Amino acid sequence: MSTKTISKIETRMAIGFDDETKAEINALKGKLDKVAHAMSAKNESHGDRLLAVMQAEGANDAPEPELLELGQWVFEGQDEQFESASVRQDGFAALWSCKADKLSPTGADFLSFGKPIIYSKPLGHGFDATNWQNSAIDRETVNDVYYLSDDDLNDSVPHIDDVLAQPNWLSDSVPQITQADLQLIFIKNLSNALIQRMQTMDRFSEDDYTIGGGGGAELMAWDIVYDKGASRFGYVCDVRQDHISIVSFQPSVTYGAITVHQFVHRNSLVGRCTRTITEAELPAFREALEACYA
Image 1 (cartoon, rainbow, N blue to C red):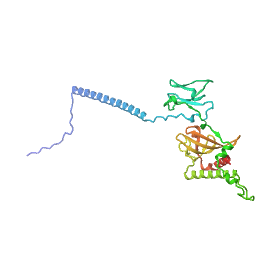
Image 2 (image 1 turned 90 degrees about the vertical axis):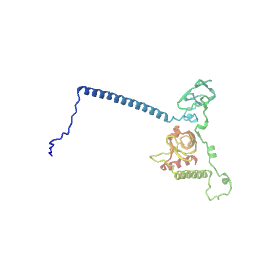
Image 3 (image 1 turned 135 degrees about the vertical axis):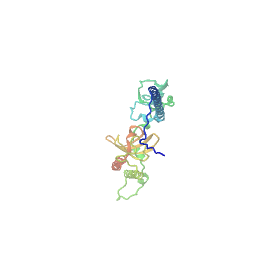
């Protein structure tokens, strides 16, 4: 038996195509490229359409702006000549220099009638136009700022008249406690009670954080507050959905210390400027309160 020695093994094979086969392969590659490009363009177009639909759905999901309710707050800071207000069909509100009974809904708006000449002042859009034909309101005095006279002030603070009327209650050697003294004692007790509540409930504003400023949404009844717009102290005596009732203490060159009661809308100038006091403002608050009632 003979053995043959394999000196070299071929590891590479070459396959060749003639020119005609190469041309067919190139034509097929071109068709495949066109199909791939068309599919890519279709996918991009579909993606754009999908994105547009998603954006539209997002816009529909966005919360609609809350409509304003026409109320006495629209008269705050307005000239006294404006005695009424109304909302037309598209939610645009206006003030009028006449009573509401001089206004008549005509078409999509109100028209005024009567003499003398009646003026209007626009308030802007965004008001609730539901039943707009009956939206006209008159200005009420409840929204106006009023000042307590001496009689009003005496009626608003409790007195112990029966005790003072009793003879020989104190001997002549003991200084008599006057009605003004008792009133000041009451005010000091009121001040202490309001401050103790603020401390217990942690209602004080800080230098870098305020409670109530910017609309008064966080204000609560019996909060001691400061109106930075008018530079005056006060306390909240009533809180409703859109309004807050504030009793303020303000010095006056003409009347001395006066008490001001305001029933204001949270989004009014007073509502946006009112915040609870800081602990550093406690001495100034006591001084303002006692100056008005002492």
